[in-house]
Length: 253
Image 1: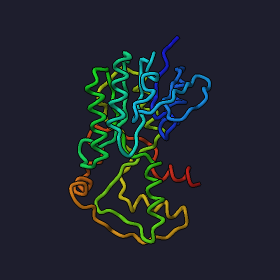
Image 2 (image 1 turned 60 degrees about the horizontal axis):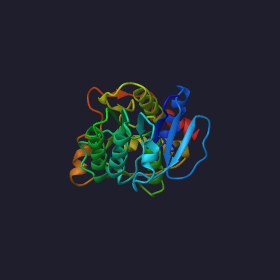
Image 3 (image 1 turned 180 degrees about the vertical axis):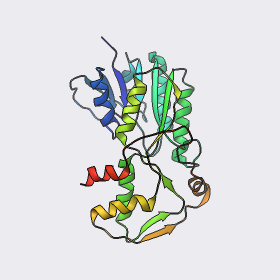
Image 4 (image 1 turned 90 degrees about the vertical axis):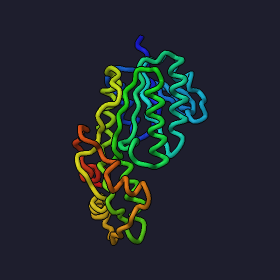
């Protein structure tokens, strides 16, 4: 019997696309989740919490490949170190991790935890693969929805994004997971570059809203980094095909 593939964050936005693709490839999947869930065909759930370092050893027991998708607003470095400790002790042979473009260039606390997570994986002694991806369409939509509730729509000057479709990131991660350890692979971003106004306009048009655009300035080192494009994919990155406009058309109708 083939060992299952452990997926952390398997019930999240990205995991919801990754798990069916792994199953379609013929692999059993084990999901580490904080909430008890019943097993389904080819999918097992282990209850645990990476931040609390609970249930992690049970999750990696008998596993050869781990796909680490779990993440949050803080503590990602601590959670990744807990996973690495357990995976090292269990003899895992391939650890795949998804990170964020600009983790090594944007001076934000959240980005620093992403970079520390990458370092924990790279220093684990386990053969590894890391993919840095741009912001998902889903995350950008959440951001735009919140801003559209304000009387004016703030537009940070010089800030640009390359939103990518979560399904394309999932497909690439599955390809990497089923392949051999590859280290840091080329980044994956969306096909187009947008400022926040360009992201907002099609959303406002589809939802029938009108909002004046208010230019704002992001202060400090983070602002300078965003204006310099430190969050954007570097040369040699791969580009997805599904655009922001296509995503909105499907999501909003």
